[in-house]
Length: 426
Image 1 (cartoon, rainbow, N blue to C red):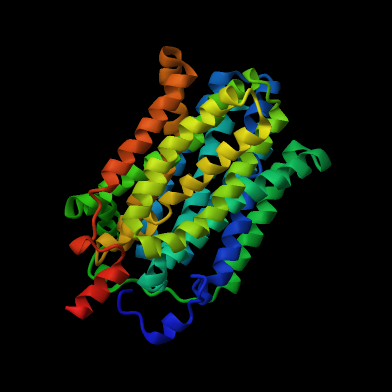
Image 2 (image 1 turned 180 degrees about the horizontal axis):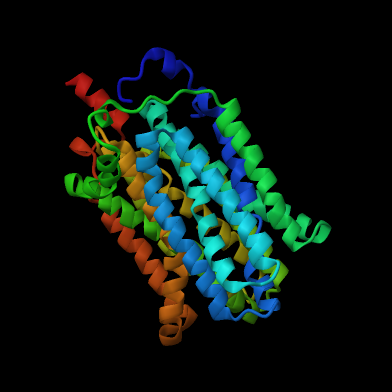
């Protein structure tokens, strides 16, 4: 990848999207919209139909575990078998899980079936989306990698948290809850058509994998951290990145209600937060390529999220429930959350080979918060209350900034592009 020819470089637009992969980006946003149709309403729906909070929590915990496992496997599977095959596997698992969950589980509220099939569904999107991230990493010139991964997180978050929420808000009123879930199959198939059929880019397995067995390739997801310990640090930082994103929905709506915010107002705030986030995913991709990948993660991500997490929590108190001031605080938090985007460029650039294995660790860090966030709330909220949880989350962000300080490229280069330019000058 470091030696990409001028032809490939010319195929990358100034915006940072590799032209050969443009259809893939479009496919990801559509696929993730389909995956996100139930995010805002599934838990309340299950509670209204007789399930307990503990059953709902277990369902999402098991789902989060399979997401984490799939996230880890995605990088090494994509590098070993090729992203196209890994993405196809994710598509099939998603469809199988959805058919079982909606058709057999939800239709009769059969809880054991719901647990098993929702877990299968959880394997789907990480294999599809994160395998494409490996594709991006290998096909993008280093000097534009920050922007390319910024676009990836733009379409990923835009589909999952924004378009999925807006679509489902219309669909559940128009076609009903279960039909909304059934419709997700149409959207993921449409996304796969763009990403796997219209996208005709060829992925050549990296030369370093040719002499190894498939088992050795899979084990690289573990052994990479021994060869390059900074990859493990990156995984830890990635876990901290979105832990609050999955912790907040557990307790923040109740806290907001206590300060006069209705459920609709809270959902509007939450949607605005991620509208801000997807915009800044792009901005920080550009910022990272210029200000430095590590610097951006450390200051805008770690320090910025630590401060704005506290700001979001205390804004309802200090503003006496002013909707616009609380929304502004949320927008700032969503923007700083995007400050971690250059981590996706930084971590695979720590290694000259086995980039898929490095991305696997990063993807594991992306998957773990799905249940780490709610687990933190469940374990500590009875001890320290919602205020204590927020301070704990803010502390984690500050810790991530300290950890990021030690994730350095050779000669403390800002990006691999700066590193290569310095080498030429010497």
